[in-house]
Length: 543
Image (cartoon, rainbow, N blue to C red; front, side, top):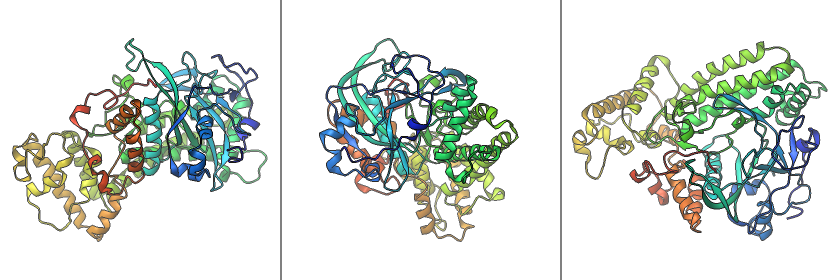
């Protein structure tokens, strides 16, 4: 593998390094990163890898399946040109400034150029102690690593901006974790994920310098980020102007807004939208207690730590993103020297999100465009319906594509088209002609049928054929998402040495919009046994 990668480590070479090379947890000043080597592990074993990201990095199966690959991506061996380091950053956690945070268990190996000419940073998560580990050990367990590995790739194939995951490697060692934070820690198998992204710079990288009034290094980092991650904003200027800084922030706002649109479209909930978990590139980053909406609930959060305030619940994510952008604006304002452009960008964020979200839901409904005069009440009544009963978001929107704009449905036939999305219905026990007598009460039945009739009437106003509309809807509404219970089944099996379910899910998530009849069993509501099971409903940040 020595000659597989050609490294160009710009972040390492051009930005200030921590002069203290001890790995002991401590405060790090005037530095963008600390040099640190991954912790050696006993017996690394490759569990799974993403063929698509491997191909883009120029890796073939011979290289990936070699014993050396597992050694490298467990951190036991460094290839020539690798310059491992952990990044220094701060952040607001749950709305409160937390000071220095940093890569507590993430270690960047270096930057490579993929086959498309794009820069990609390789990063190991769970590779051991760094100066930013605080009271932790810098390690990760199989449970959280399987979730991060699968979700990174699931989001990519859904078309959501995200960091990628190249490999999942077990370490052959045990890691002590208190999964429920209840004082009963247990040993779990250790694992490491190799994450891949053009950049891992976060909002918090800028915040830490601003908080410490280290404006020289703040400017160095901003200029570095613009020149390498946003080069289209400049030409050959030696100095970056205020106008370019403002254009940079406008683009960050736009990328973040579009990320929120995509999360909303697929029903994804991040769970920990702290500013240190916000990518400067508008990528989904740091997969902890995430989840997809099952029963549609704007107030649902997958994070047990967030159950009281629900700050990071599904419906709050767009406004939390704006709040985080406001914190970034505060951090970079001293370098720009004025705030008018930043304030305008933040205001525009709200306008853009409101407009784009309506257009996005129009696409989910198969409408050619959003027409306020026709669609505002249609949308309002849709969301009233979705929260009136426990309705699976993914299944409901996918089933809507089956509705014909011309068919003369009875009320029972209308309801039957979407019945599989309702959690209260046992469709085996209650056939289509008896839904009125099922656990769904008559009020919900009538509300559903009433909305479906309005929806059909709206479809009739379009010149688009049912076939074309169905095709477009099925490219917008995924059939398969990585539900928590599916990931948990894979984790349980992997913990016993059976990785077959991980591989099955990897195949499933590669084509989430396709019918994939061989995987039809995964197009189903969350099973009742998973409603309260740990890892299937809500999760802690323990990993």
